[in-house]
Length: 174
Length: 415
Ligand SMILES: Cc1cc2nc3c(=O)[nH]c(=O)nc-3n(C[C@H](O)[C@H](O)[C@H](O)COP(=O)(O)O)c2cc1C
Ligand code: SF4
Ligand code: FES
Image 1 (cartoon, each protein chain N blue to C red):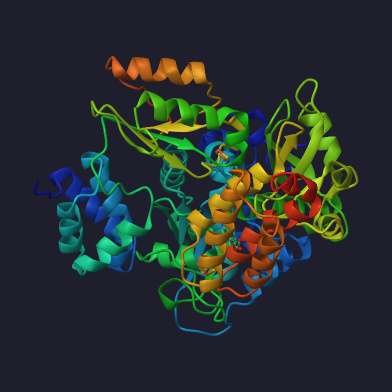
Image 2 (image 1 turned 135 degrees about the horizontal axis):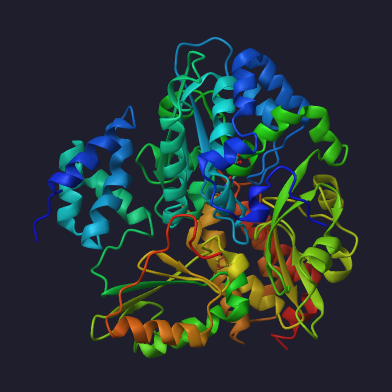
């Protein structure tokens, strides 16, 4: 599927570029901008970012492959990123991961998408919210002080099509 | 006990609007500095305060600033490290959320001292809400003539920009961060040259942690002697501690340097969970050697006490674990982390972290050999101090201390 930035995004592209003396610095911000709408970085997104910044395509592809937040495959309707690092792990994070793997029917796989394409699970390293462990992100939004029960309820409501309310800046988590 | 002296907003956890910050005396230090503290004097003031880097290494901040070349043509950059990737650390997040203006004021003071006209705040990619708080504060400051051209009408120009990372622990390492900010893969660079000489876009660059920069406004407002008086002779001031794990009240606490660790754990944090005993403390983030409960009992929260106990204050991430935790399991969890996060540039780190991870997996999975314990320690020896950045060395911290201090738990796995 072809990809190009919309007119609105084009203005954002200009604002981003103006922040740096060197266009290459805009690589990661533009990839974020594209992923916000497309939810993953397709080869066409790589083409477009390279074209806009007049950089070799291989440079952009190389950057994409280095950073874990860039999804290199399409993701389900909701992306669930669960912290697997120590403080979360010892406070119930491990059980949450086991539960999600089972619920999504992932078998032995650590991560992946369920058959219906509703949820993609990924395991991530420390999210810098260890004081409210266990922690996970749903579509990039922090959910803290989680428990198995809360995770079940959260997925149930998402499955029914509930939309997540984003906390206002400064009010996220606690 | 914790006292929120330099970071009052972290106690109230209120949303920090510009008006609130101004009411509490915000931006007074900046005004004071632009009115009559010459850049060299401001650097000297920070030096006299004894402020040390809060990102992990504890390098004296004023001294770092004075490494900038005295005479040169290139622009100087300031970079704020808000990557907050060290497992256990979550204090910078609270500064970004609750005290963004204090960070901005600290960065403007730093810009004045080092002669920078542009600064970047490198925020880890997951911190979308936190970045929005900072962006909003930047817009407020710009609107009030506190950012951009002719700040406060004093002819001082400086602009600050947010730059989001995209998920890679190694990008918290300062030279990897610079590569990432330039739009490349986040590979650490060999040092020297140090960033103060050759940094962002090849220009002299100062990189400081969020907490380091945000500590500067209260230091300027109250004077370096005041700051020195808050701590111990070798560790002046206060520090933020991110406490997580099996305590009743985890969270971010500001303590005077030299506060006994157990005061923090049993006082502010309410002690261990009901019916449980303290087993192990990792006092400075996942990379530093762990302490047994007995060792932890005599530790005070300052650089020198940590050194005497064979560990480090690091980023001030105190991970407290009780007797439900198996040490091999803990070490395996962190072994996975470092294997996953090694950038792969140096053979000892790439191979060493992979092998340690594999060996720990087989030990915990009951497929280990008695010789694996010494093999782990041997690998640590071959990784430590043989790599481009400190990640390789960091990876050995939990393995070495875990296998040495809790050897019987590992031996029980191979019996
Ligand atoms: C692997 C690695 C990861 C690091 N991660 C961070 C980080 O997330 N945040 C941070 O401030 N410093 C981090 N550091 C330390 C930085 O390299 C650097 O020392 C620090 O930003 C300097 O600022 P300071 O002097 O104010 O502490 C890391 C270092 C290493 C080796
Ligand atoms: S020590 Fe590890 S993370 Fe650091 S540069 Fe070498 S391979 Fe990369
Ligand atoms: S360990 Fe999960 S957020 Fe830090």
